[in-house]
Image 1 (tube, protein in one colour):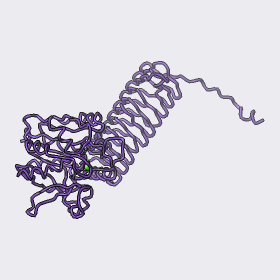
Image 2 (tube, helix red, strand yellow):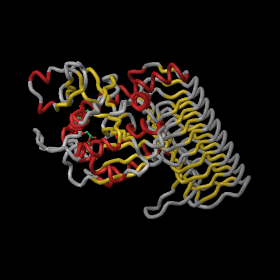
Image 3 (cartoon, helix red, strand yellow):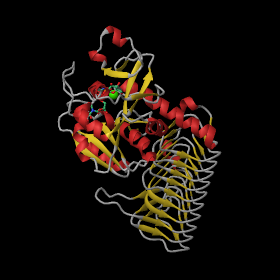
Amino acid sequence: MTSDTAAIVLAAGKGTRFRSEVAKVLHRAAGRSLLGHVLEAVRPLALAQTVVVVGHQAEEVAAEVDRVGLPGATTALQAEQRGTGHAVQQAVPALDPAIRRVLILPGDTPLLPARVLEALLEGATAGGAMLTARMEDPTGYGRVLRTPGGTVERIVEHRDATEAERAVTEINAGMYLLDRAGLEAALGDLDDDNAQGEVYLTDIVEVLGRGGAPVSAIDANPVEIAGVNDRAQLADAATRLRANHLDHLLREVGVSVTDPATTYVDVDVEVARDAVLLPGTILDAGTRVGAGAVIGPNSHLTACAVGAGATVHSTRAEQAAIGEGATVGPFSHLRPGTVLGARSKVGAYAETKNAAIGDGSKVPHLAYVGDATVGQGVNIACGVITVNYDGATKSHTTVEDGAFVGCDTMLVAPVTIGAGAYTAAGSTITEDVPPGALGIARSRQTTKEGWVERRRG
Ligand code: UD1
Ligand code: CA
């Protein structure tokens, strides 16, 4: 039953060890914020409610919660960050009356898979359960102290621990599933009598145990529950996230990756079967690559949609849609709003922006096409420029189906080249060219016979 279960996600801390102006949970790993990773792990549980505790940069963190769009997610404010226990105290009043069990999670554990939370939900006993792990280097984590009988007695934070306690390698993952009534009662018993002068959530373990409802421990994989407390750990987590995602693409989807070590694919990137990712490929969040497409070498795509069978060689593209079987690059820059039709071609050395290029149309070399609508079967020859900006306003260029825009044409917008029309090479086109016409706008050539000889003489 998850309709009686809520999550509280702790995301109010500053993250002092990050040495950053930006709240820790907003820092990104493999294209998602740390908080986003945790909320995505919660999503499949389909919980009735999730309360995210915000404090440091509360507005920005709340905006991130909205952006993630987890159903049932709200925020609670912890105006002063007085510790993890204090954070939970701020969230509890926001819980719906129907909630009976509370899952408590830190906001800084990006490697956490949903399956580990499912195990916690299933494995919890009456008193509740917590996740623990054996860490080779437990530095910084709370240590799990057990009675001789093996029951979890209490958690001691690294800073408060004695040498002997620090030698314990079983650590607290900071993830708990607790009975709501027990939690609320235990929260009333917390104090801030510790090294940091904070209200530690970890102290509830001892309080609940003394009350006769000891918390059981579920052993988890130390990598999956790892917290990110500084930028070195952030970089390490990002590397693991990308490696996991590449592994999924290689083994489960059927994507070829020539060199995983030089291929950077964010977690929110979809790549279809038989696509090939060549070395130096960077695919940022929001990118989708169709079946059989070939990306790279050296292509960096942000929030792009690439159609099946397209090739994108040595290209930078942002918020661009690349049609099926299209050819892009080498050395092209597709800026936001670019929409390339099926089997179209852009580059080498071309830049597009806010431009729709129709099926089968070609912008093969050294061109700038911005604020333009280009029909089907159009040829935009070498050196063509849409003159879209007069220093104050941007104007639109339209090139209709089957037109041929000759080399080195300046299309001074607003301007329309009609269907099947031509422009002569080297023309500066300032007026519309009707369908089927030739637009020519250049001075006639004068040839001076014998000029060189006369000059030398
Ligand atoms: C915490 C646990 C520690 C555990 C570790 C696991 C406590 C006291 N310690 O330590 O036992 O081994 O997690 O990763 O709980 N936060 C707030 N408000 C606050 C303080 C923190 O919302 O006042 C949030 C932070 O933004 C963060 C989370 O709580 O997302 C955990 O805080 P953090 O400072 O990272 O705790 P740790 O020192 O890692
Ligand atoms: Ca932490």
